[in-house]
Image (cartoon, rainbow, N blue to C red; front, side, top):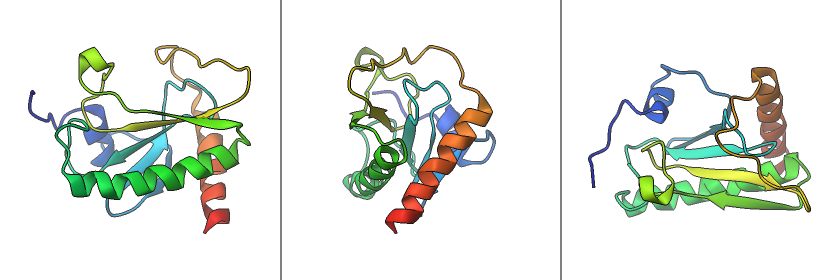
Length: 143
């Protein structure tokens, strides 16, 4: 397995070199809007420690991260009044991974509404900001 590259886009987001629409952050993780969403509210959750993917992550990194995935997933579903939630996690190019920093995709789902292509283009920043605000509000309501 190739080594972790700290210059990946999520590493740059963690260092503040690239902006994001943040929805949640704690000592171990960061959640933010996917700029190429497959549906309204598509959110990413990443660990703060360098991990290329699921297969090289430390078990304690995964343990901390999955709690955030669950917490943010509940808020994403509530914020969009979704019928369900799809969780994606890809590993290595053959597994569909394109950014080589461990991350989970949380996509609210609605009966009868298909997912958009992930390469479908960048979302409008104002829309992403509004979606992030909705998820932050849902997180606050759950607290």
